[in-house]
Image 1: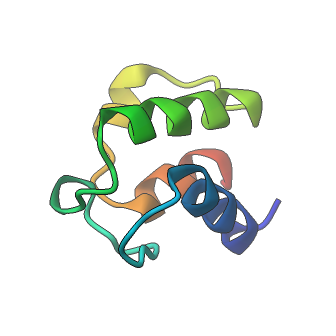
Image 2: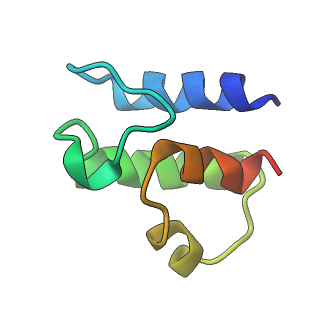
Length: 71
């Protein structure tokens, strides 16, 4: 899976009201609430992410999240 494909899928999961891109800061987006982040974690696990939740919690942008599965 490419970076762009993973980013597109994550954005579809979130179903945002405002545009999101790779540089969207998680803490600054109303669309990235706790439910959206839970759904993203489920997506990461389904796509082979085996790292820790601590690593996920260190992510500050959508780029950081995508990079967890596209390394």
